[in-house]
Image 1 (cartoon, one colour):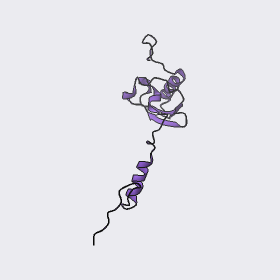
Image 2: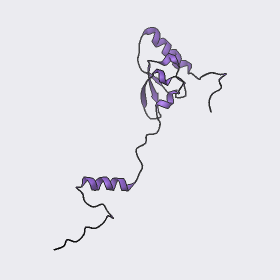
Image 3: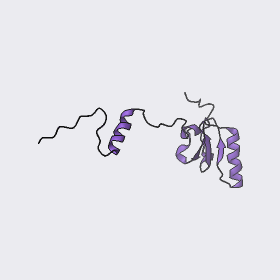
Image 4: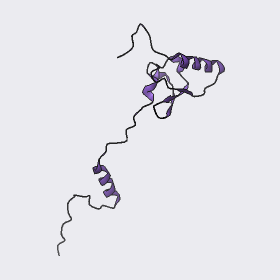
Length: 113
């Protein structure tokens, strides 16, 4: 469910002040944050954030296309490593073994003399 238009976008005040302070100084260091629910505003464009995903910090350089989205959208918390299954592993092993038949595959035909 989205936030009420009357309230406006949620922006973490501590994060916004850090960005404004960096603009005053003219520095562009990465800003570490845990505020995944913070909305990206135009003031953030050109800054680099280190967003925590629950395990590590992921680097994010903010561009114009990201305005209006949440910081957490760009730091996924779950990493898909593929479906489990022995069939894919067995097929890869059979292909790497030089054409050896896969387990449960067809038996080679008897040679005619």
